[in-house]
Image (cartoon, rainbow, N blue to C red; front, side, top):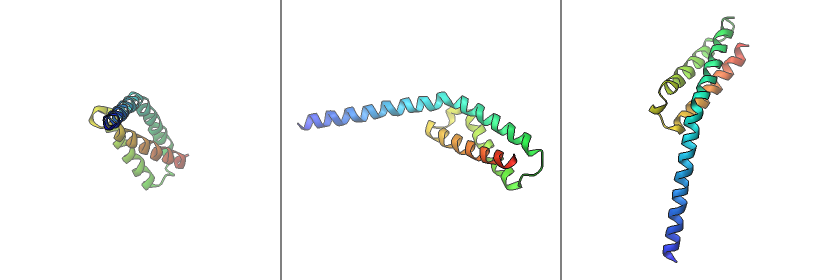
Length: 103
């Protein structure tokens, strides 16, 4: 009975590792698309910011978010998939909010 519990626990742990590996792979596979979307959003923000009606704090936040994600997009291997996902999602949210303010 005890060995059956140990084998079951080991199987559960191994299946979790496989699932985590596939999640990491999915994140790394989608990162180039995410980076392309962020580049587009940043370009749109820059174009909209020409109006001059945007707060300096918004411009600074957008720049910081974009600069942070550029590092990951330039070298995706330098970060974990989970970290890349968090940074990319945060950057996208920040740039999207800045773009809404700019329009």
